[in-house]
Length: 347
Image (tube, rainbow, N blue to C red; front, side, top):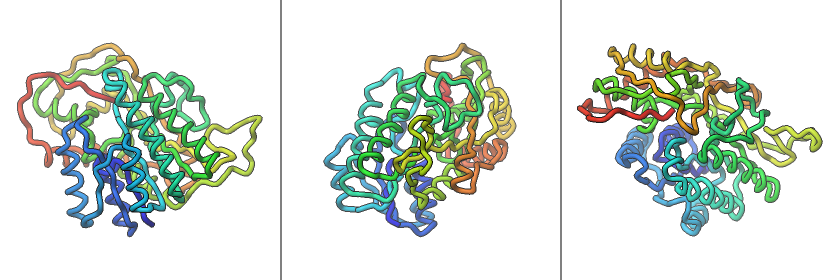
């Protein structure tokens, strides 16, 4: 099929493009190559994909530019849209909240409008485990309440799910939302903990562990995320025949709309995660323990039973194996250099 991948130069997006092209799909990409982090990493990801599977069209378009986005849909006529572009980062949303309105809300509305006016078979879009917010009942189920987000980033992702439902109901757009749980692996974002921690350890710089290192996170290796997406591409949701308005299921609908968790199902304490990184790097970390930061969720753990029922697949790569693969890439890609300030980790 012809598939449009937004955020195609991003961490998940580049891996997704590689897999879809390898599977024989026709892929067109979109990315705005913004400077939230070094755009060179984005260009290097694209080069990595092209070296393995050849060239693919990649448009430099900002999601907030409705006219340019609609023109791209008109030109490419995608059958499936995998929407991975967004302004990421919980802590950055405390510093620059308006960036999240432009990309995650206005940009997502533009995606929905383009899917409305250029009908697609399936819209798959990235949500986040952060939507569970103040909910402390784990493992998180797609049937749980998500009415108490703890950051603006989480609130925009919850809003995306609601916006998608309204368009699915009104215009019959089959929509699948994916709540990702702490994705890591080669070509990851440099604002996330794997790269920040690895660089700090390798360079002998202090790193800051918030909540005194007591966080638990359900880490998900990138290949498991991509396998889940690949299996869902041709599984466009249908209206749930037994959906009950008096006892509504939050994960399904009378519209062609679904929500799935994608997580490793094995939460790991931040201190244990750090110990694995130390093992693979062969070096000890210099650690500064600090209190909980605003917007942070204490613990995450995914219930992926709905994903398994829909696709026959659940994430399976253990953290020790995944971090080993990540560190092998890290050593190859990042030159070790001196730094003069501690790394701030974004879990």
